[in-house]
Amino acid sequence: MYDFKIAAADKATLYRDLLLALEGLTTGEPDPIANMANAAAVIWESVPDLNWAGFYRNVGGELVLGPFQGRAACIRIPFGKGVCGTAAAEQTVQRVDDVNAFPGHIACDSASQSELVVPIVRDGHLIAVLDLDSPQKARFDAEDEAGFKQLCELLARVL
Ligand code: SME
Image (cartoon, rainbow, N blue to C red; front, side, top):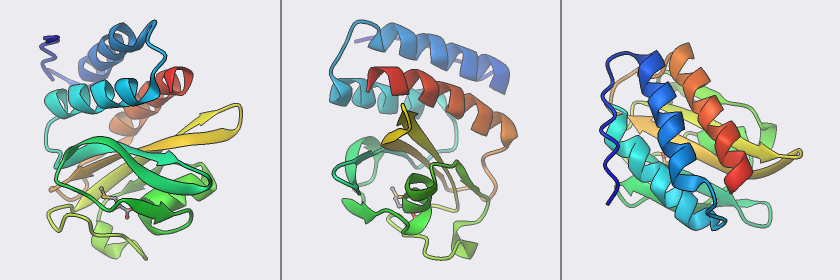
């Protein structure tokens, strides 16, 4: 078992330590499922106020559930549908303060109130999206978005 003990004193420290932990966990490991699984675990353990953290993979132009932490979730999401499908289709970050106000939001867990979805792209090709759900409205700010974007740039190299 790895014990990273990431204490979220402030967000800058949290995301710096998360990046270091993920670099350590993924360096030299070519298996994308193993890397997604450890990424989901370390995010879940370190980032406060989440009720879901994990990946949907691009499998032949459809998002398919990947490694995650949280409650069992929807398995397949078409590109363009919901928050994840929008992030995938547009290859843009979706930061949603109130998921109930997002047209087409897919409510896998009714506890989710806000959501951050970050596309993971390598050489213009969408590999997966990282999906984070929170039971708090407006849980994610610009600093969270920047921190997770950096994490996804690292993940793009190891997935
Ligand atoms: N809410 C997402 C679906 C995935 S779950 O949150 C895990 C969406 O609208 O795409």
